[in-house]
Image (cartoon, rainbow, N blue to C red; front, side):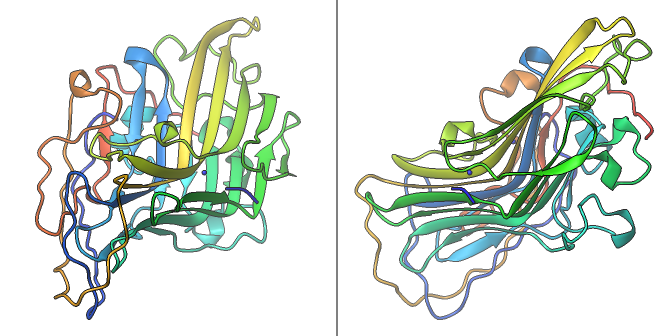
Length: 355
C-alpha cells in the first residue's frame, strides 16, 4: 500500500455535476481560489516533435460547494480512432469495467465502476479522488485471450488529495495488488511499491505503443524488448495535464506512474528505434492560496448541472500541458468537460496491428 494529459479533441460529450441541497459556501475566486482536479488516465508516447499526448476527461471542482464526476462512458484509453492516432493503437488502458467474456484482469478482479471526482466541500476545502482497477494491455503481442495481452494490472487503486489549510495539504496513492508480465512472459504478482519506492523490471516482452513507417515490416516482435517502471507520484509537475489544470500557491498531487521504454529491434537484434511512453493513472491534485482557511458552511441554492464541450489545438499551441481551444464555460466555474482533450502531432496515423 502506498501514498500517487494530445493533440485533437475526440468528439463532444457531456459532463454534469450535482450539488447536494441545503449546504454550500460562497463562490470561490476562479483564478486564485481553492480548486481540485481528478483524471482517470493520461498518456504520453514518444518525445520531442514526434510525441503524442492524450488526457482523458478531467474533472474540476465547481466554484460553489459540489462535485464534478467522470461519466461511466469512459472505460478505455484510447477509446476511438482519433485517440489512437495520437498515442498509437497498440497499448490500451482499461478503467475497471469489462465484458466478463473478455476480461483483461487476473482471476478474482471484479468488473467495477470507477470513482473519479473533484469536490469543493461546503467549507471551501477542495478534494479529489480517483478509484478503480487499471489494466494496461499490448494488443500487438498477439495473445489468444485478452488476459494474455495484459502487461500491468493495478487492482484496488486509489489516489486522493485534500487541501484543508497551509499545514493540511495531503495526497495519498494506494493499491491492493500489482501484477506485471515478466521476462518469461508470465503475469505475476509484484509487491506494491511504497511512497518513494518503485518496481523496476528490464528486458520484458512488450511491443511499442505505436507503429511508424520506418518500423513496419522491419521490426522483429520476438526480439523487441521493454523496460518498465511503476511508482507512486506526489509531485504536481509529474502529472500529465491540460494547461487549464492550474497550480496554486500550495498544492497536493497523487497518481500512479507507469513508464515503458521499448527498444524496437530487427531480425539481426539491432535497435532500430527506442520508444518511451508514460502513463499517469488516477492523476489528482488540489490547490489553495497560502492564506487559505476553511469557511463556515452557508446555505445556498444548488447549482444546475452543466455540459462542457471539449476543443482542439494544434502542436504549435502546446507548451507543457494540453490546452483545448474553444472551450465553453457555462456557469458554476466548471472548466474541463468529459470530451477527452486530445492533441495530434502532424505525422501519419500509425498502422493498425491485428492481434
